[in-house]
Image (tube, rainbow, N blue to C red; front, side, top):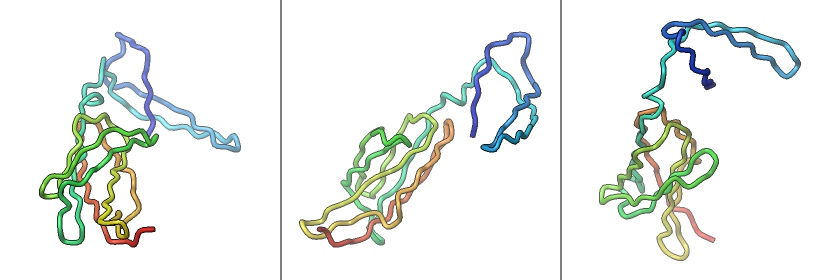
Length: 141
């Protein structure tokens, strides 16, 4: 996804044709033209989003478990605890790519870790993404 901010042009509002040129690594150009609607500001762009989900350990929810949210630059964007049903929620997030990270150490020798590799979640402006993190038992060091 590409984004561009055009300088304000009060005389140009509404449908407008935009052309772009892409050049690949060997110097071959390609052109594309599309019609966009120009507006003064983008209220949807600033609308906050939500990432919510549940942490499951097999068929059972994982209550009182810390969940951390990271952006695509690996910056910590918040920490929450799961509720008694294993649910968590991060509110008021800007659009972007995020990862949800959690793990549970059950004792000194066993730990519960995510079943699948942690993937990025793409949150659109003002959107809501639902996530399920499935934990499984793995021997510790």
